[in-house]
Amino acid sequence: MKKIIASLGFVLVLISASGQNNPCACCTENHSAFDFWLGKWEVTLPNGNIAGENVIEKIQGDCVLRENWKGANGNFTGTSYNFYNTATGLWEQLWLDRAGTILKLSGKRIDNQMILMSDGVVNKDESITTQRITWTLLEDGKVRQVWEVLRDGVAENVLFDGLYNKMD
Image (cartoon, rainbow, N blue to C red; front, side):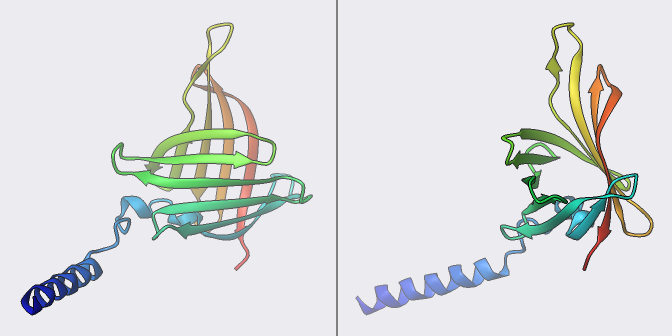
């Protein structure tokens, strides 16, 4: 009986030690592609007015970027969960806000931009509408976010254009 307990104890120690030596599951270059968006930001509109504040942080063992948005007037808030999906090789975002909006996007980083798009929606006139959000890392470390509506692949409306300025 003592041999069984000793053997079991040894196996548990080995399992514990091997778990500590495993690298972070989400510590890859692909998982870090959106890290330029991390931080506490003040977001301004093209006219210079403050749009709000946004805090982007890594959670869940660095596997998820969580966004917490608060509009300048304090009445509008939203949260997004952003992650690299190893099965598809794409970044995905799920946005939820206090107005009940749900937006699902996917895409990838190309050079200094993260470009995520929604699935297309077929309109009554048979045109296809998609939403595209592009985050661009600027040379000075600021980030520009542009949210566009595309009809048949052509941008027809800008819903949001914000410049992120680090607060910390």
